[in-house]
Length: 82
Image 1 (tube, one colour):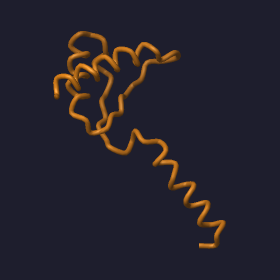
Image 2: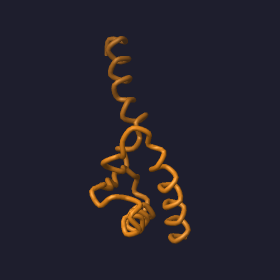
Image 3: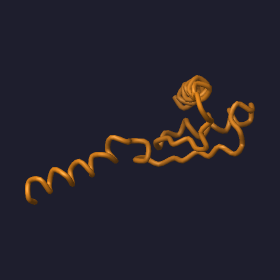
Image 4: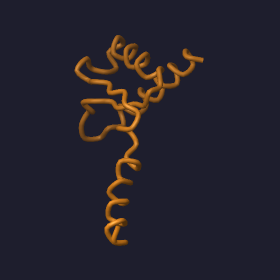
């Protein structure tokens, strides 16, 4: 359900954000799940997250392995002479 997903997202964010050792993140990148904007809004209202922190909802920005794959593919194609 949407409410349960929002509660799970809030629990995750409450646990993950204080674990940042050096600095607080400026942005939070999430996939297209509808629970994240709800959780971010509630955490901002409760002052767990500063108002200046942005939420980016993009499907592929959070998937670092997929972003890295194109560079590996490019190098392997060059080695094969393609």
